[in-house]
Image (tube, rainbow, N blue to C red; front, side):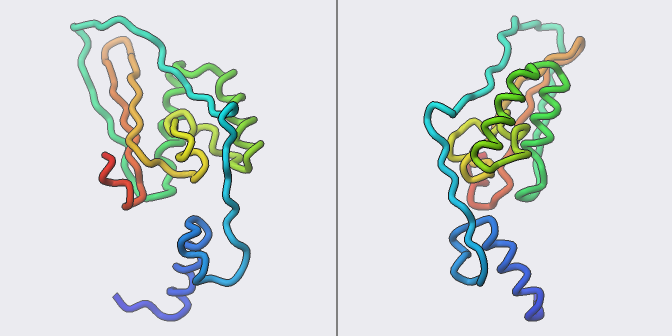
Length: 152
Protein backbone atom coordinates (compact mmCIF):
# COMPACT_ATOMS: atom_id res chain seq x y z
CA UNK A 1 0.00 0.00 0.00
CA UNK A 2 1.05 3.59 -0.50
CA UNK A 3 2.32 5.39 2.57
CA UNK A 4 2.76 9.13 2.81
CA UNK A 5 6.12 10.64 3.83
CA UNK A 6 5.07 11.13 7.45
CA UNK A 7 4.01 7.48 7.79
CA UNK A 8 7.26 6.25 6.22
CA UNK A 9 9.28 8.40 8.65
CA UNK A 10 7.29 7.01 11.61
CA UNK A 11 7.96 3.43 10.47
CA UNK A 12 11.68 4.13 10.08
CA UNK A 13 11.90 5.65 13.55
CA UNK A 14 10.02 2.76 15.12
CA UNK A 15 12.29 0.23 13.44
CA UNK A 16 15.48 2.13 14.27
CA UNK A 17 14.57 2.29 17.93
CA UNK A 18 14.46 -1.49 18.25
CA UNK A 19 16.87 -2.76 15.62
CA UNK A 20 20.38 -1.35 15.15
CA UNK A 21 20.11 -2.60 11.57
CA UNK A 22 17.73 0.28 10.75
CA UNK A 23 19.59 2.98 12.70
CA UNK A 24 21.44 4.45 9.67
CA UNK A 25 18.10 5.52 8.16
CA UNK A 26 17.07 7.70 11.09
CA UNK A 27 18.64 10.76 12.69
CA UNK A 28 18.77 10.84 16.46
CA UNK A 29 19.98 8.67 19.31
CA UNK A 30 21.16 5.17 18.51
CA UNK A 31 19.87 2.10 20.36
CA UNK A 32 22.05 1.07 23.27
CA UNK A 33 23.64 -2.36 22.95
CA UNK A 34 23.18 -4.42 26.12
CA UNK A 35 25.61 -7.18 27.06
CA UNK A 36 24.74 -9.30 30.08
CA UNK A 37 27.65 -10.71 32.07
CA UNK A 38 27.82 -14.50 32.28
CA UNK A 39 27.55 -14.55 36.08
CA UNK A 40 24.34 -12.51 35.90
CA UNK A 41 22.60 -14.93 33.53
CA UNK A 42 20.09 -16.71 35.76
CA UNK A 43 17.36 -19.01 34.46
CA UNK A 44 14.06 -19.93 36.11
CA UNK A 45 13.56 -23.65 36.66
CA UNK A 46 10.27 -25.50 36.42
CA UNK A 47 9.18 -27.50 39.45
CA UNK A 48 9.56 -31.27 39.06
CA UNK A 49 6.20 -33.02 38.97
CA UNK A 50 4.98 -36.57 38.73
CA UNK A 51 2.90 -37.56 35.72
CA UNK A 52 -0.82 -38.13 36.23
CA UNK A 53 -2.58 -40.02 33.45
CA UNK A 54 -6.09 -38.98 34.48
CA UNK A 55 -5.55 -35.25 33.86
CA UNK A 56 -6.63 -33.66 30.60
CA UNK A 57 -3.80 -32.23 28.51
CA UNK A 58 -4.14 -28.70 27.16
CA UNK A 59 -1.64 -26.90 24.93
CA UNK A 60 -1.71 -23.10 24.84
CA UNK A 61 0.39 -21.12 22.36
CA UNK A 62 0.82 -17.40 23.01
CA UNK A 63 1.13 -15.72 19.62
CA UNK A 64 1.13 -12.13 18.49
CA UNK A 65 3.14 -9.34 16.92
CA UNK A 66 6.61 -8.30 18.06
CA UNK A 67 6.49 -6.29 21.32
CA UNK A 68 2.88 -7.31 22.00
CA UNK A 69 3.75 -8.65 25.48
CA UNK A 70 3.59 -12.40 24.81
CA UNK A 71 6.52 -13.37 27.04
CA UNK A 72 5.43 -10.92 29.73
CA UNK A 73 1.91 -12.39 29.74
CA UNK A 74 3.30 -15.92 29.90
CA UNK A 75 5.65 -14.99 32.77
CA UNK A 76 2.84 -13.38 34.75
CA UNK A 77 0.62 -16.43 34.17
CA UNK A 78 3.37 -18.78 35.38
CA UNK A 79 3.85 -16.62 38.48
CA UNK A 80 0.09 -16.57 39.10
CA UNK A 81 0.09 -20.38 39.04
CA UNK A 82 2.79 -20.31 41.74
CA UNK A 83 5.53 -21.95 39.65
CA UNK A 84 7.93 -19.01 40.07
CA UNK A 85 8.56 -17.68 43.60
CA UNK A 86 8.55 -13.95 44.31
CA UNK A 87 12.26 -14.15 45.16
CA UNK A 88 13.06 -15.24 41.60
CA UNK A 89 11.03 -12.38 40.12
CA UNK A 90 12.84 -9.90 42.40
CA UNK A 91 16.20 -11.26 41.19
CA UNK A 92 15.08 -10.89 37.57
CA UNK A 93 13.89 -7.35 38.31
CA UNK A 94 17.25 -6.36 39.83
CA UNK A 95 19.15 -7.82 36.87
CA UNK A 96 16.81 -6.18 34.36
CA UNK A 97 17.29 -2.79 36.00
CA UNK A 98 21.06 -3.32 36.17
CA UNK A 99 21.18 -3.85 32.40
CA UNK A 100 18.71 -1.13 31.45
CA UNK A 101 15.83 -3.52 30.73
CA UNK A 102 13.51 -2.41 33.55
CA UNK A 103 10.06 -3.93 33.18
CA UNK A 104 11.24 -7.03 31.35
CA UNK A 105 11.57 -9.24 34.44
CA UNK A 106 8.33 -11.08 33.62
CA UNK A 107 9.48 -11.80 30.07
CA UNK A 108 12.76 -13.24 31.42
CA UNK A 109 10.82 -16.19 32.85
CA UNK A 110 10.25 -17.47 29.31
CA UNK A 111 13.17 -15.78 27.52
CA UNK A 112 15.97 -17.92 28.90
CA UNK A 113 18.69 -17.35 26.33
CA UNK A 114 21.23 -14.64 27.12
CA UNK A 115 20.81 -13.21 23.62
CA UNK A 116 17.02 -13.00 24.06
CA UNK A 117 17.47 -10.94 27.21
CA UNK A 118 20.11 -8.69 25.66
CA UNK A 119 18.03 -7.99 22.54
CA UNK A 120 14.69 -7.79 24.34
CA UNK A 121 12.89 -10.25 22.06
CA UNK A 122 12.13 -13.97 21.89
CA UNK A 123 14.31 -15.97 19.52
CA UNK A 124 13.06 -19.48 20.21
CA UNK A 125 9.75 -20.87 21.42
CA UNK A 126 9.65 -20.99 25.21
CA UNK A 127 7.88 -23.92 26.89
CA UNK A 128 6.52 -24.25 30.42
CA UNK A 129 4.33 -26.97 31.93
CA UNK A 130 1.62 -25.82 34.32
CA UNK A 131 -0.61 -28.03 36.41
CA UNK A 132 -4.09 -27.43 37.80
CA UNK A 133 -6.34 -29.79 39.71
CA UNK A 134 -7.87 -31.09 36.48
CA UNK A 135 -5.41 -30.25 33.66
CA UNK A 136 -1.79 -30.40 32.60
CA UNK A 137 -1.14 -27.27 30.55
CA UNK A 138 1.73 -26.89 28.09
CA UNK A 139 2.33 -23.14 27.71
CA UNK A 140 4.29 -22.17 24.59
CA UNK A 141 5.57 -18.64 24.03
CA UNK A 142 6.14 -18.09 20.30
CA UNK A 143 8.55 -15.48 18.91
CA UNK A 144 6.85 -12.46 17.38
CA UNK A 145 9.60 -11.15 15.12
CA UNK A 146 9.29 -12.53 11.61
CA UNK A 147 13.03 -13.33 11.46
CA UNK A 148 12.55 -15.90 14.23
CA UNK A 149 9.27 -17.50 13.12
CA UNK A 150 11.29 -20.39 11.68
CA UNK A 151 12.34 -21.26 15.27
CA UNK A 152 8.78 -22.29 16.12
